[in-house]
Image (tube, rainbow, N blue to C red; front, side, top):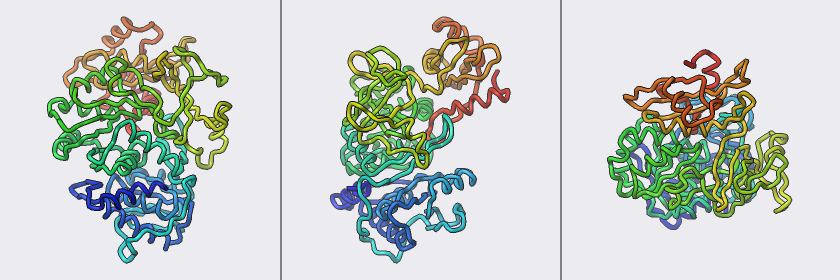
Length: 494
């Protein structure tokens, strides 16, 4: 079965059940499946063949979801681009992927000459029955372009088998059922957002799609109105919802919250637990390259709030040194991941693929070298330390930004914080911090530095502190340390 089978199977079992809600529109599984079938036939009629790449230039919407499944039914490979992207960014992705077609709303001129443009939405005049299957489960299904927060954006190649394996594992540990109603503001262009669709359609659940997190008050209203049972968040969204009174609404139907993309601070974890004590909180870790690698069982959150848990079902993880040797519990090293959900490589980048996907002597397959530093305790629980690329080298010492962030986050009045390194002629790199104060907080740079001196080694105390109304984020919700570094270089630090 390919990914499109998730929709087809649910449409067969629960044809009239609501699959998607967006902007006041409610659509059943059968309706979406028929729309995808018609659009798939339109793609085939336009010459799209097995393995061809098709861009979907569409914000979160029912049409975008139907287009994803239409591309898969046509045997092609999809990638999603937010229509708000700059024209040069869209052109870059179309060129890199070699896309032969674009699905976009009417009137959006996004494709160069020679690339077929189909209007998103239904394709009247084509049969609503599925076309003959045109691919195998080992075929490429999706290109997911990374946000480029640590460098150049890369096209992660995911096969049907990769995506289905991840969906199976996530459904298992979240215990998803057809009774769940999931509210997602996450972009479909990234695996965390796409995963809300694949897991919900596997379980026969309902997804309520929001186009963005710009209106947190509206999100709280939707939580209550739609009786939401599942809420995926990233740290910035968690902060916004807590500031809007997440704990005051009750939300008795909210069964679980998940967090991925970036780690929540211990302070945010405790705030969420206090606000919603009846809801299960799943702290998770993953990358685009493997979609998901670990989760912390909710019963362990109160005692292991700084952990991202254990390997997801069907996955193997270990911590290794620079030579690839397994490290014992307590030692810090690189996390490597193996399993059927690990990507097949980077599009058009075989050399980079070879650096992160390496032969595994233990299994005979390959392991993904994540580039992230972790440690594992004696019970097998994982603790994220930081990205190798983000480690700050100052005064001959190495500083993990997350360790400094955790200390600053404990200071009353800090809503969000990100720590990063900036060039310094004397130190090599200096520690810098960008801080978003909570409303009414009277924070000062000197006060933050004094707080850090009480809890950290002197070389870890930020020399630059930049107060911001909001931290810059990438399209998938991660704080962009690269944007913060560039701001300091251009004189933004105080």
